[in-house]
Image (tube, rainbow, N blue to C red; front, side):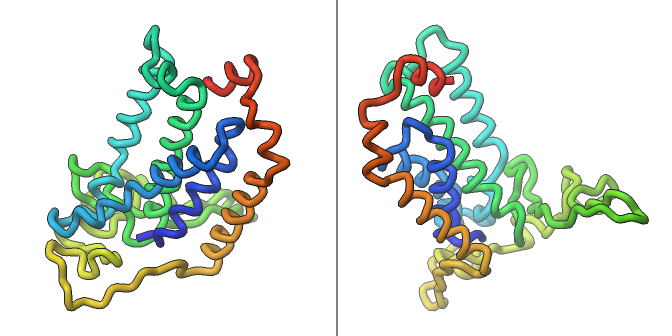
Length: 233
């Protein structure tokens, strides 16, 4: 499972990049919290077998939230979110959804043990792992997607098992199975690769730049009418 600090850092980077004039401490906290929400399925695994990287890591949750957000902000005559929080609420809502899907779910899909994308329709863990290159002899070569993949799942990705056959270990639930396992050693991983340390440092630097007093001074009065209209789209 992706280290929790890395997930938070990715959420912070998305907030710094996408919030625009809606950027402030509260909106960053909302986006980072949304990015961390999928990690709660590790807590659920203490009671629900196979919940880790499945219960909150499937595609159905972000798809449902995206549909609900689009319906409220684009299709309804009066948007509940816009009426209560204005253009800022709409902007933060979409960026928070990106934080949930891109920072919270996607990193686990690209590393062992993968995620159960279609849970609870099926309980197969998928991992998107491979390479993309251009060879002077073979042309374009990619191994991420295979239409001839022989596995238990419906999707054309490598399978690492199912929620029944594989228990995903986390610092909350070391053995990945229901129960507290009080005697087990718990390790809270900050980073487990050099590139992850780079991401953490980048997130800290990005937030430091965005929170500079002279940067915020120009946005405290809020955007103009034209900017507000653009931000709400």
